[in-house]
Length: 420
Ligand SMILES: Nc1nc2c(c(=O)[nH]1)N[C@H]1C(S)=C(S)[C@@H](COP(=O)(O)OP(=O)(O)OC[C@H]3O[C@@H](n4cnc5c(N)ncnc54)[C@H](O)[C@@H]3O)O[C@H]1N2
Ligand code: MOO
Image 1 (cartoon, rainbow, N blue to C red):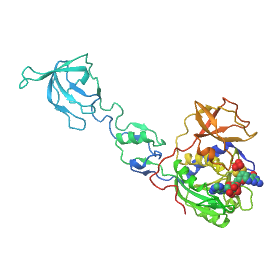
Image 2 (image 1 turned 90 degrees about the horizontal axis):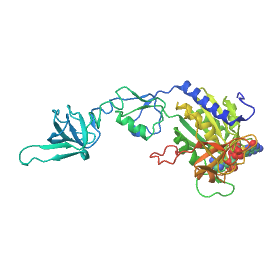
Image 3 (image 1 turned 180 degrees about the vertical axis):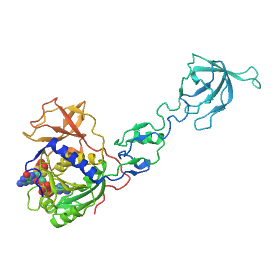
Image 4 (image 1 turned 60 degrees about the vertical axis):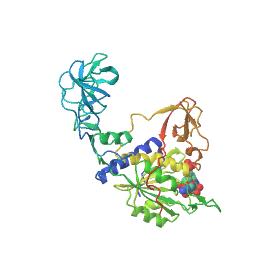
């Protein structure tokens, strides 16, 4: 194994290296885009610019309920109405009006739409003969309340660039623009290997055994970051099984938990060495989580070693796995600057290392949470975000950058929770 670094890497540099590793892996593997039904595209990344497949609106349409009119009023009102989704009415001659609904096709010859509340009708003296007359109640401007075809876009216009993350509004826009199956990037494949003989998968801790807190957490978290989680496997403290799992994995990113430090059964370094991996980050100047590591297994595959302490593992996930995955997915660079918010209370810092501290938003400030020790999840489980506390700490009012936590979603599939 080539020793990439003998010393811990500063936190910002570790994130940058993880992003470069992801970009390198993307270039090396160049997996082709896939087309997925709109219903499955949420959270995916557009592989191609979203180009309009139609003009929008695709026909001249009414912006209001009222009458389509031709020329100056008063107008004679036709008996039929034009509703949205129906064939358009025959062309209007000057002096004619037809009842029209919002979104309906404006008939040829119409010069404006007059809103229902801006005109009044006058019934003919003899209701069995004659026509209804429509009188405007205010001046009518040519073109008013008509949405002309192509007002929003013309067919072929680029609506969004490649690299856009598909949110609910993007789904709506894609549907409006005529898409059934947009082209998205394949999800990076991730495999999670949970190490440790002391871990229980159910029931109460006993006899020095504890519950595995990372297996249930990491799959959904990595799924929320855009990954396809192939499996979460429990490996115990078996170096040979770990070697086989790491070298045999089909995933672009293998995530291990535990075994990063120097304990008697901390096998991760030795296994990486034996597998001929290159350490890109070996320890990060961040608390918690400083033993985290990043290794290149081959041109297209990497391993992120998360420390076993659960909050330290979250720190590794946010520091190394998140930027690597974002780069693998070719996501557009984060908006200029991550938002910063003032911290309400002083936060003690580490003299040399960055600290990541769970916080909640309160009245425009950040309130650091207790129970933020490396082995604790009580703070982060109640948090809105993780605040980045620079070396030396932060005085009240200091603006801190935030790392986002995934919002809870009800995933229809068991993705990310498949245990083997
Ligand atoms: N001599 C030193 N000892 C330690 C150092 C050090 O620098 N020198 N660093 C400490 C720090 S910081 C951390 S973090 C941990 C990292 O340890 P490992 O990554 O080797 O993890 P383990 O030893 O396997 O486990 C640590 C701790 O976490 C618990 N654990 C592990 N996996 C899980 C899980 N899936 N769910 C819940 N809890 C888990 C495990 O039982 C241990 O209590 O090393 C320090 N030691
Ligand atoms: O990474 Mo360790 O204490 O910082 O949990």
